[in-house]
Image (tube, rainbow, N blue to C red; front, side, top):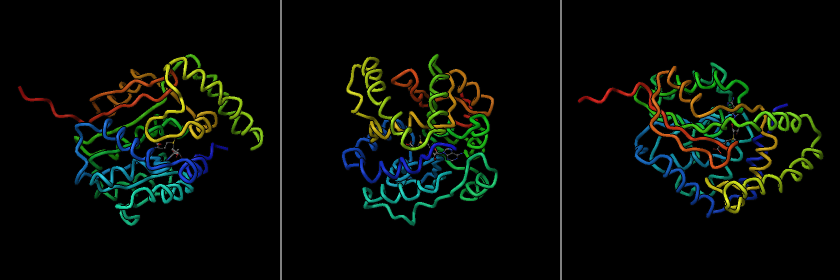
Length: 268
Ligand SMILES: C[S@@+](CC[C@H](N)C(=O)[O-])C[C@H]1O[C@@H](n2cnc3c(N)ncnc32)[C@H](O)[C@@H]1O
């Protein structure tokens, strides 16, 4: 049984999302997208989760489409929408399906007359699909020539394999023991993050929330990981050039990347 991201996101959007967190998500989104115009652009969000990035992109003037494997995320998106009074739900078409499924990819491509879109965004998703390399191939097809791919992928670390076992185990346990595992790891993760960053771990970025992040972290299976160099090589083989990366704050956190498809050579 894979981890139920939809339930976790719905609980987050209902119980933890505040206007302050939305503001923070907007600021961090603006920082990541610095220099990339969104107004009038086409934008696909793969694995939109609670829907914050999708709604922020729409708010910034992009024509958006969301894709999710977990149908409960649609309910989470509707909850998150309450914080975006200027965005209409009819402006947020959703495709429910896996990015590993060719039918889903074809449905998404139809939104761009089969040309691909200006920006494909997929934050913390492709490593949860069960086949990260195939997922990269699918998202690559959705980006038009000169378009952008914005992704975040778990970093490879000596402890990654231990986490793989913990996450696998979590998904095998009955729900009472799953909660026990979360409350066991809550102080451990808090301390480990504090020791690495010297900052209060409950102060989150991207509008996230520490408790819901711990649940996502302890249970988020399937789980894969890769070094910055491995991701760069993978994307280069798919015809993308790296514009920038932002290193994860903690060793097993997500590295963020911005790639451009078939970037034209700069004329001298
Ligand atoms: C860690 S969450 C990230 C959510 C959101 N992108 C964010 O930045 O907060 C990963 C999301 O990817 C979705 N997901 C996992 N496998 C997927 C697949 N094969 N196709 C589409 N979405 C998938 C999950 O349901 C989950 O909502």
